[in-house]
Length: 214
Ligand code: ASC
Image (cartoon, rainbow, N blue to C red; front, side, top):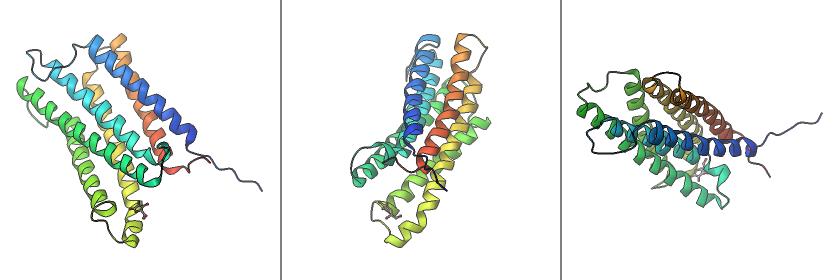
């Protein structure tokens, strides 16, 4: 009997479209419906908006693109690997800065740190993400393990990466819930951002596990 191979290509293309849609929704939300961005401001919501932007666009969308790099970068494997590494480093930088702005917002608005499920999930996520990057770097880049060790770590690297990415999506959902006020235009944008992030998780996960098209 005939067998069929589903390639990553269409889901990866869908995931790219979701990146554009989520980035657009988040910008419209934070710049139009909310009060925009600032690191220093009397209106502390502007600092919270920086946190939200850095986590969704800088951390989640860029990390998703990093996971898909082996399917999307039209170049030699070495270049794809460099892209995977660098995009994850950019995501990590945005994530750490995003966590910093969350603390800055809480302190300046007179709240207590680390009390919500969102903050706990987020702290776990960013720590695991940093650990995963360091383990990947030492195993696969510098100085690099011997080839047999690289191969036996690979399923753990892949599963760990997908698990941490899923945890980041869960953290975003709890963060979006905290920012939801009422189901008006803005509320719809917030909820649709959450739905699109679920679809993005599916798209990124399938892009990673499905074979590339020929
Ligand atoms: C690497 C690399 C891979 C893996 C492979 C072991 O450093 O680029 O593709 O390790 O050699 O699975």
